[in-house]
Image (cartoon, rainbow, N blue to C red; front, side, top):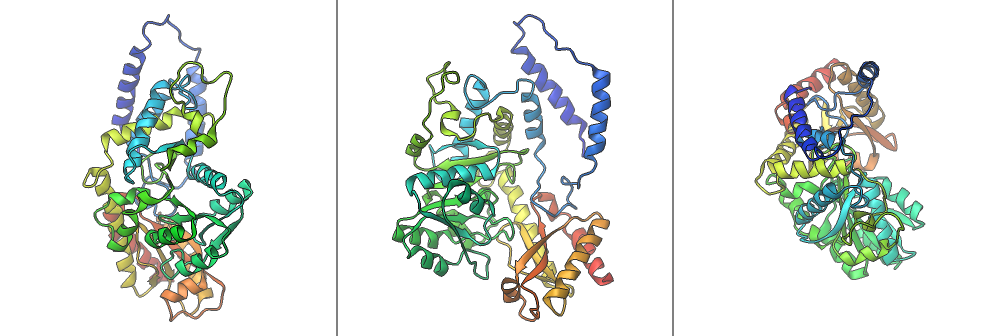
Length: 447
């Protein structure tokens, strides 16, 4: 968990940082090291009450450890503690953020998007849908029934109507149901989920774009989870067709604190049309006095934002450029291969039924049983016993129709089915797959 080399790198970086302030009169803030040491030991002890998110045997929720370079850059920048709302509060880190936005835009074929970092995907999606509401006032927003719940909540906050769209057997937004809603003429925005957080399914963007054109709707891509996977060489051709057309949407959200190796919170919102910046227009008598250049706070609903997040992301993208065939892309390929490997193992198992073939690095599976009620009970027991063996999974409630579409032999006697879910978002998961599968099989055999 702890690599002493990281502490050495942090100390060296801080030494270099301090040289930039050598001309100032000497000043050392008062600091009671003994009292601080006692408190920090208490914090360390309290923090032990967490799951081992960094370890390959944690295959539960979407929790990926930040890369060491991101941790170090983030920590080092805290000695300055820049605020990226205005250039007055964070000159260097604001420049880094703007450079990061250019690189993230190029992921989707956008050379000069309007965008900025946010505290996470929820705030990023809120900004995108807020702009949608400005362009289509009073019109509804629609998203997959398996899309993140944040979209319905955001729509409510914005005073816009929201309607969920049923999914097909692949976990994607059903295009026929989408068109049925669009015919009413009161839909302003379609949210295409590029990797939904439950199933990892990627909505069929080519079909959504055609419908949006036909009915004059705006398309927002919630790629908070799956945004980086367009770099992969291992992605299947059907999913690749969606990534090839991501640049045609109106706005995109991607979360560097998911697959981008960043600490929380680091989300990002991007707009293809830079003219939407006019909706952010405001003036401040005290914030923007030192520079005529664009301040990030002029194109953001958030005010204070940590410049540390920009410094960490910039350092990571310098070390691991966002290019196909690069180290970053190869790590994502390992995650995809791990998910496919687990799915295949479970498909050959006498104890489990894997559901959708994974498009990204998420695998959802049911425990074999005569009916859905018993399958749910067994899933909860496997979840608990796996944790006892330091294998940490997640559970998910799925509509019985979706589960039985993949497992027709399962008798339906409940409305939902408790299933198991593994998010294999660490490249190391591919190396630990045999151990994970062996633990799952041993637990199921004991049941």
